[in-house]
Image (cartoon, rainbow, N blue to C red):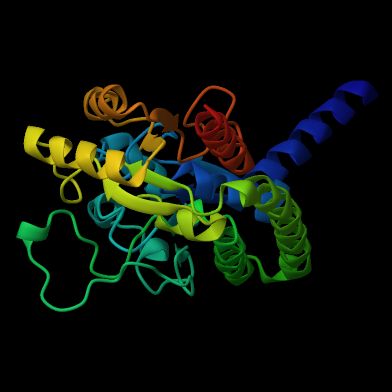
Length: 300
């Protein structure tokens, strides 16, 4: 009888601990990973997008609304990349997640942005982001600011755990710095390497590691390549000696394969998010995989 009571009490306390976890919903798997590092056992995190999805093109589903209804906090990529979340948050009617509420976190806040368009912006320019290029997480240094934004949100909701979140965030930042030192050392011999990318997803990565992006497979952001555009790219790549084509793993290979066949350049199909390819289980694995691919391609 005593043993049974102890088991029941253990189940009760385990259930209480599970209920005490903050329920967090993120737009992307990278945000999920970072949130888990900062929140530790205090959070239960779900990502609405999978790691192999184009974040521009996520289709809202009723199951996502249900997750947001139960959430204490939402973490967005921001910069209009995950505009599909607007309708989901509105449908969930969870006031804790509305813009400006304690449970609303824009992970891009305070990140130094690139490619902010100047002058008039219209649909003829393609899928232009008026606030700046939203692929900021592909510079690992920016992950530190993302972690700080998430930490601030968690502290608003669970102030008594502020010291715990601070410690976890600091540990994550130290790991970023340590890994970044290694990645920069590996990429140093490739500084100035000219590459063509499929979409304008890589300016932050290129700036961090000294690559020069000379063109894109897309003639304009979000616009599929035409035959004439690919022909012009072939000329440019031959003229500039481009040896690497960098493409997100979810984009079609037809255009990049055409360029590779005509120029001799190597195609690197790269994951851009946690879970975006086999073996890419963490945010740090993204950079290990991409850098290894570039090293291999540039050596041929």
